[in-house]
Amino acid sequence: MNTAQIRLATLWRREVNRFMKIKKQTLGAPLLETFLYITIFGAALGSRIKHLHGIDYVLFVIPGLIMMAWATNAFSNNSSSILQQKFQGAIQDQLSSPASPAELLLAFSLGGFMRGLIVAMLTFVVSVVLVGLPVDHALVLIPSLFLVGFFFSQLGVLIGVRAEQFDDVAFAQTFVLQPLIFLGGVFYSASLLPQPWETLTRFDPIFYMINLVRYGFVGFTEVNIWLSLLALTGATAALFLVNLRLFSRGYRLRA
Amino acid sequence: MKALDIKDLEKRYPNGVEALRGVSVEIEEGEFFGLLGPNGAGKSTLIHCTTGLAQPTGGSIEVFGNDAIDHYAEARQAVGLAPQEPNIDWFLTVEETLDYHAGYFGMPRRERRQRSKELLETFSLTEKRDERTRTLSGGMKRRLILARAMMHRPRLLILDEPTAGVDVELRLELWHYVQKINQEGTTILLTTHYLEEAEQLCDRIAFIAEGQIVAEGTSPELAERFDVANLEDAYLALVGRGELSRSHIETAPDAETEVEA
Image (cartoon, each protein chain N blue to C red):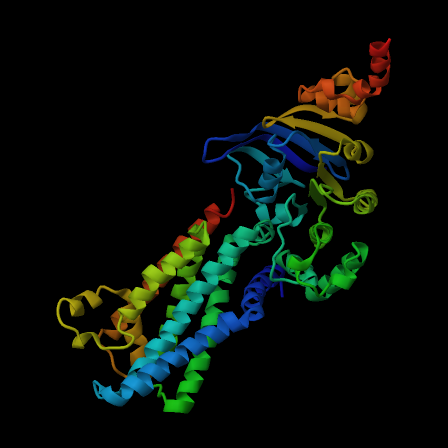
């Protein structure tokens, strides 16, 4: 490996090491949360609802839960990691190294991406074993999940860099991210909602992400797949460029 | 060759505070240079601008001929920083702290292992290698910060008040160590409030006050410049507290005798 690769690998290893050291909190808790959702919505509600658009209700819900697990873990990992390091001053060790803004940004992004990937993969494996979750369109599913993971990693980085106190991160997660995810149709189909809620749901960007992932798993969607994929790619790239500019300027990182 | 060449450096913070107002300093390769000044004079800001932790608003900084902004990677590669505040990562162990730091500077794994073993030994940290950094005592944290700054074998070592709040033993250990690496060729920039430390270790010293270098030279040159007996009195003259000079304390018993008579 050359020196740039060693730098990037070390920065990334630090991020992964951080969440692995507190894995009860960073991996155990989100896994338990996801399985509780599956139990409640699959076993309890599923026994009454049975099918939605011809799909087993539990299979209808699980793709959204996998997406939600990847998204929230990627977001919270990166926002917390950056803010904690700013708070401790430990980020100075990385900022005073020869690492470029792009290397720093990539490493922070990939830390949360990995945490989300681990939780989502474990949820997927358990779902395959327990309820036989299918994969209908792998070529849509894989890029969709990777883009969702990377988008929320970037969002976590953005909030972590901007945040000045832990309250700022908690606010973004509790009052912005979670409502958007829950109202984006993880547990229901937008077409079942009365107006104006059905139309309003279509203004929620997460609605499109959930539909992409749902289409990848069970082949059902309420949106145009290719347009959604294109929009998600554009949004992820735009967010990455915004973050890169912040890192290059040293916004709230360098005095 | 100049290890550090700072010209007309300015730093104005967004809140309007002018921390540096046209600072120029040259440090030759292999030199042991001291930077003295009262709290808030601009010492740490100058160091932060040099290491990329703060962004200058004017002037230039070159580290071994590399511009600290345009060629930041080469400039930072040459610098090791032991900051004033212990800025260590609570999640890491002592050994990981050293290993990761060297990785950030692109050092290969085998070399990192060898180097961290060496420095753990030098700074009496070997027994603590697997402990989380947050469990360390203040003195141990200080040792770790110094070891971390040395991990990537910097050509310019910046020590920002390295002996503040440490015991005599560690202070003397550090003095021996930095003198040794200075003799081996490492350039050192030291900020300290202990004037005897600067007098003992530094080849040249600069006084900084209100964001400007106000005097520069060897310890005797500075004393001569302020027309006083030693470096401490020169410093007191600089900050306008000449009445605190130890020479006044030494004359106190005579003064008491006069009063009694």
